[in-house]
View 1 (cartoon, rainbow, N blue to C red):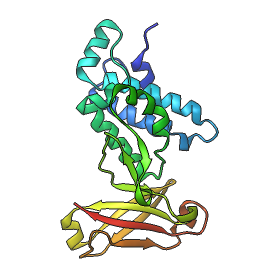
View 2 (cartoon, one colour):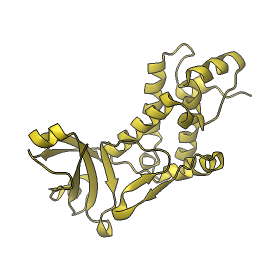
View 3 (tube, rainbow, N blue to C red):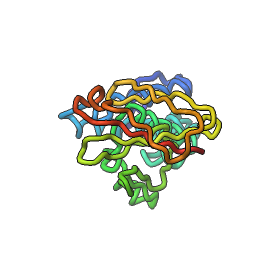
View 4 (cartoon, rainbow, N blue to C red):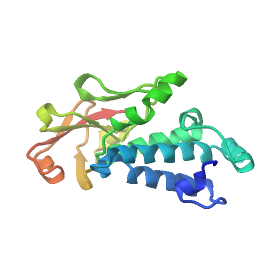
Length: 215
């Protein structure tokens, strides 16, 4: 039986493109494995299902084909179409802002995209920075690993104007909102220390270190 992608995303068949996008992002946050401890494999499968559905319904041509014939495309379409790929990159930013991990993406997409030649990988580069293959979202905060699992590192990208004048940003980690005050005339590479912030977000002693990047 053909898959009902509308049912997967929980939207009616006459849903607008914006409603479909909102439903996809809401479900993706819901089924992130970090939010389903002990049920990670189930969450990964659900994440695959909603990405497959959005890869079709978020692509105007694929949706038209699906509505007419009842079948169209695959999960790979989410990266091959500009609209769905942009939404996926926005979702990665949401994950980063919420302090949710990204390692699970390798198990969800890695094998399929390598077979297709897309070269998608999730890995940790020098200093623990997250690196993607062909996916290169411009994260608001990039999470990195801290030494011995104590401190937590983030990269914060701001504009040059914000660097000159100073600004305040909000970092969300483990459901906790932290205010990051960026002083005026900050330079790219400067590190802001949120002393003891890990106690509030993770329940153990440690600092959150925010490295400033300008663009």
